[in-house]
Length: 160
Image (cartoon, rainbow, N blue to C red):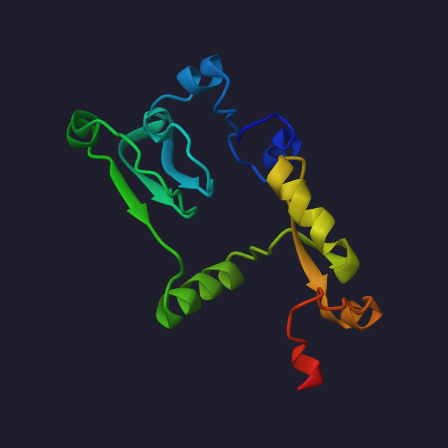
């Protein structure tokens, strides 16, 4: 992660937590992970994080970074590392994941939020101040939202 703010949540879930800007933590984590799930959607040092993989480990990109990144071919070859990416699995993969979760009683950490809090939650994600849990918008609260008028000079779809 980029800060220490989610360490307690990670510990509670049994995850090893590394702040990638902390050189000592990254160095101590060298060759310790079987899998790294990278959800970051901004440019960052992927090669350093790949170094935390065990021999034969997989680095999985789930965040879309617009700029190319560098990773040493020798690191990949000598350590049998693989770099993979996924937007989403198909129906069979999703069913397999759901079956696995049901079998092992794996449930998501989430909290329901009012629709009015969606912008604040998005800003917290952008600022890096959001908690480790994920928020789900309670769609029944949409009816409590104020109507937003179209800016001057735009076409109001409801008036057509």
